[in-house]
Image (cartoon, rainbow, N blue to C red; front, side, top):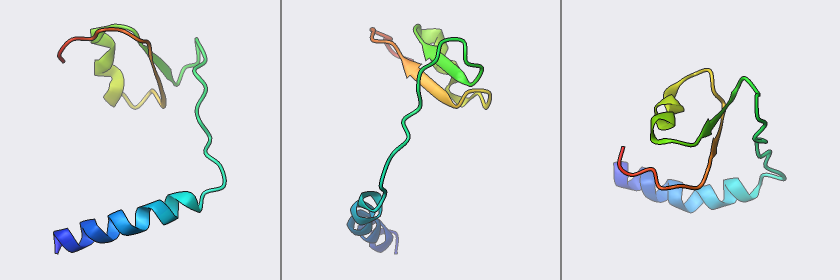
Length: 65
């Protein structure tokens, strides 16, 4: 049954996504209370923090988590 649902999802997802007229991409605003800038390995631990809605990842080598 899971395989059937997965196949149906894969077949229908592109049509559902294509039906959207626009996509609102969040803006990375420095100092915004709901924005977390990932700039170091330790910053990744905030990914599950409910205070943040927008995550902006700076280029870098973060190694293994």
